[in-house]
Length: 120
Image (cartoon, rainbow, N blue to C red; front, side, top):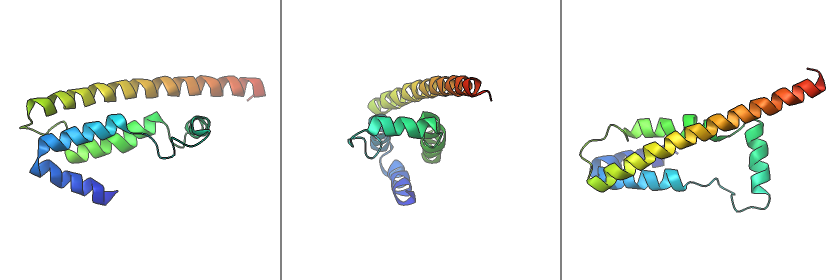
């Protein structure tokens, strides 16, 4: 991971507009490895419900540390298209944050109902 992180960091110095566009493409188009496997949705829901890996973790612990490391939102001198793509990324991250919050609220409600049924 560090190799790719650092390579992209170097690309930000060579051609920041192209690097920003590549980052936006990857962040928005990302699919978990194994997404084509049979029963992937069921298994990924189980993983998320267990708190192992979910949208909040993806947003807070994967995406944002990388974006901060690269200085995506601080980068200056981008061309107009890269600026527009960066705005698209900001909107996507806001939507992802909202989805993560909704998932956390639903998960907490399910856990509370389960605890109530079990007399916890």
